[in-house]
Structure formats: structure tokens, C-alpha cells
Amino acid sequence: MNFHAKVAVVTGASSGIGRATALSLAQAGATVVATARRENLLEEVSAACRVHTQDSCHIAGDLADKTFAEHLVEETVRRFGRIDILVNNAAVPMHHPLYEISAEQAEDVMRINFLSCLWTTFAAIPHMLLQAESGGGVIVNVSSFAATVVPTYETIYAASKGAMNGFTRGLWNDLAGSGIHAVLIIPGPIDTEIWDKVEDENAYRGKKFPAQLVADEILLAIAERRFEVTVPRRNLQLVTARLFATVLPALVRKGVARMNPVKPQWVRDARARARKGLRMGLGDRPR
Image (cartoon, rainbow, N blue to C red; front, side, top):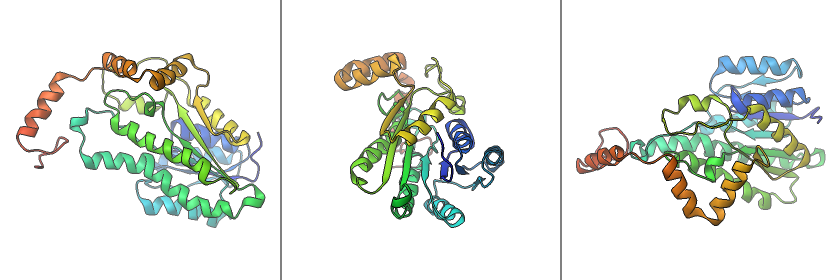
């Protein structure tokens, strides 16, 4: 695959899937604009990208901020005159009992995991429309299999990725004839640092796949204009789970509940807080 003369923005590029994707795009000839909050790690990523494409760079910032998300796209176009590929990969985990999550915390997850994707996409579309004669553009949204089969304590994370799924699938029709293509990437269990932040003895502990596998599928999906790719493809466990979630949802619910049941203590504690008139979450604010 040759991405020579293409300009690609990759969010959440400081580690994991984002880092692997940024490096793979640079190796394929694209000028990469990497973004994330951790500038020290971004500097390492952009330096590695410049080994292959000398104009690659990074712009550090918080994609939960709409102003920054829009600035990221506009600054890329100001520097390079175009944006050919937008990879919306930035995400934060949220693996907690629902009762311990405040509405504000849930909103923070939605801003990073979904709204940042919406903001960058809306900022990129006008520029990509003007590039129709030179290839238009590709928007890649990196979701999660957790939105297909929702694990216990993953309600908010799954909701954010479910919103991304619906948004991307809508783009397939709404962008028809524009020269802009949208790709939905649905990774299964991928070996990234996100697992280090999950403190739950019953959380998934099975096989995890390398982030590079997702990066390879992203580049292939861009090159071949694919619409939706589950990674790893043709994985029996994921294929079976998707099928059961569609035709036997009650069985899936029972299976998830059996693998990681809700602890009765969480319910007792939440009920005690409710009696005190407290809101959801662990703060002390009244309803």
C-alpha cells in the first residue's frame, strides 16, 4: 500500500492502536499528524514517523475540548493544505459499577470517545469535499466489540462506542457521491494499556491480540474502501458472539451475567446512598 502525498490525522496516537496506526501510515508514505494529551509520548511517535516522512508532526491537546478538536483539523489543513485521512481512535476506558459513576463522569467519557469523533469529522468534511478531484478523503472510526456484547460494568464505555457505530453507519449513506468514505473498525480484545486500568478480578483475562493487527486492517480498509471490519477477522469467538447477540440476546445476557456478576454489595451500597438522597456516583451531592 502506498500513501505517498497523503496527509493523515491520527487521534489517540501516543500508545496502542493509535501509535501503531500512525507509524504504519508513515511507513506507507503518509505525512502523519499525531495527537493525544501526553506530549512526551507524542514526541516519540512523531520522531519515529519522521524517519519515513520528514514532515510528520504532532499536536498535543485534549480532544474532550471541542475547540481543540476543531483546531486540530484546521491546523493540519493550514500546514499541509489538505487532510486525506482522519483516524478517530482516541478513547478512555470506563469500567466501574454503574452506581459509582456520576452523570458528569459519563459525559466526560462520551466527549472523548464519541463527541471528539463527531467534532473532528464535521471539521474535516468541508475540506475533503473540496478534494473530490484528488481523492476526497477517508474517515476511520475505531470502535469496540464491547458495543456489540456489553460486558458488566462497561455500560458507559459501550454507549460511547455504540454512538460511534451508529454515526459511522449513517455516514455511509449521507456521504454518498461526495468522494468521502467512512470506515468502521471494531476491535476485539487488543493488547493495549487500557487493560492496566481495569481493576476487576472478573474482567476479561483471555487472549489479547497485538495493536499492530488493527493498524494493518485500518490501512487495508482505507486502501480497499471497506466499510466495516471486525479485528481479528474470522475469529470464531467474535463471530459466534456477534451471531448470538443478534439471534439469542437473552442467552448472551445470561452468559455475561454468569461470567461477571454484579456484586450484591454494590446494590446494597447504592440503595443506602439512595436512602440518603444522594445522586449517582461517589460524591456527596444530594439529588
